[in-house]
Image (tube, rainbow, N blue to C red):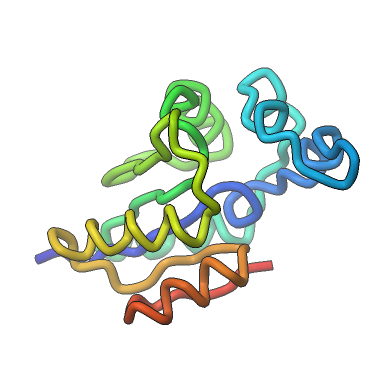
Amino acid sequence: MKRVISFDIDGVLVDASERLRMCIKDNKVDWDCFLDCNKLPLDKPKPRIIEYLNFIRDRGFGVIIVTGRRESMRDCTIRQLRAFGISNIDGIFMRPDDNTEPDPIYKAWMMRNLVRRLNVMVHFDDNPDTVHALLSIGIDAVLIS
């Protein structure tokens, strides 16, 4: 079975800090604002991580994306990833539109299901709580800042 490396998008492959700043209201994130495809042009690629993703893919590892972005963002997400030099992904796993669970809960559930059918070696994420949740269920995870 092919070994697979998993990446989050926002905060890992892309710098979404400008989009995030725009969507903070009363010290809380307005998720409808943050997860608006029309705001993705505010993001910037993170070249070092994208180069690493391409490096490991070119050496025969599978690459998947596990993101908290909503399924309804699939098309704009794929366009953004391609524009930033990310293609030939083995799978993009997105949050169902009606799912409002915090990322650590959603991603732990998703990764638990993925490791049943994929040989996921490690997941890269920018959320310390998500990394902790994955580690606590036996899935290797690395915090990216």
